[in-house]
Length: 392
Image 1 (cartoon, helix red, strand yellow):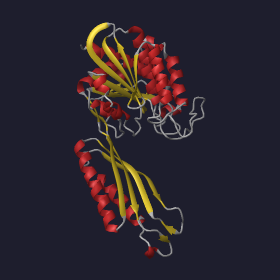
Image 2 (cartoon, one colour):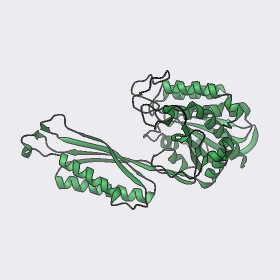
Image 3 (tube, one colour):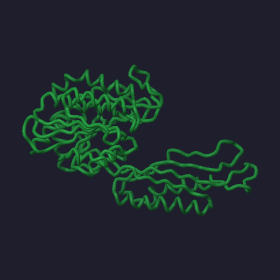
Image 4 (cartoon, helix red, strand yellow):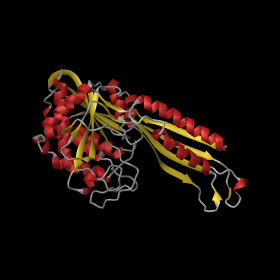
């Protein structure tokens, strides 16, 4: 695979970094060890380091040796997921209940590799901002960094991010203009009734029939209330009630997510969701606690930066490895908050190789990042810097 020779020389080092991060995962806003290692490595390469953005985020600033007024941002996420690891290889998680099940260990290692190479050469005009972001997994660490002054303190003319994709073959880069990933909402529905013995239900107020009615009605919001030409997903992932076979529960809780690609679809579904939940709860006479939280906006690539990234990808993996036709995905990414502030693009990098773990979906206890992707991703990041800053 035609990666950059100087980056290929860093393959073993990036692999060691990546596996160390994998063995020591830290969940959102607790990336103390990870961010500390990132900062120390950047400083050792002569990169100006700023700690504590978005709580545990790190930004490295590197100025090229050629004059230029443009600046580009490269972002990697650092956090792990709060879930147990099921793998038994040597670099498996040593932190119970935490796992790098989404490849952020690899994203961080790739950006470090790109930073080390660029710091050694500085053969570019302008400035690079290396953005190591905390808390991507549902905690909107990107928004925290933006609110903390990311782009006022470190102005960027463009910003780029990337993510591994286990469903695409290794050496494939998917990039397209427009919407890449969905807006993400999370919700919690708590219904409070009155507990009673199962033999005497008339003495209580059973919240379960209400919960079942809400569950069934919510399934129709996409199938019957949304145009088949729109993309929307509503999924309930948790349903909790009761602790005994013979006691009617006091409380039922359901938790889930809504995914949409278009802002108008999001707003309409959000209103319908509230209408259905509140109406059915009122009809059953139970007390409702509803928490409907908007998490990420859709991830939307700027056409110019998507085109530049596609050209860079063709240089690195060959034109045959570039996919511009991948449909928008209903996964979400808080990199969307950065793209709301600065033009840029989000790339998906295929990582499916021979190892079964490289083809395992993310957020799975048997997933692992494919180390063969490290030089590919780092090469892409280096070339993005060179091409973007050359525009000046």
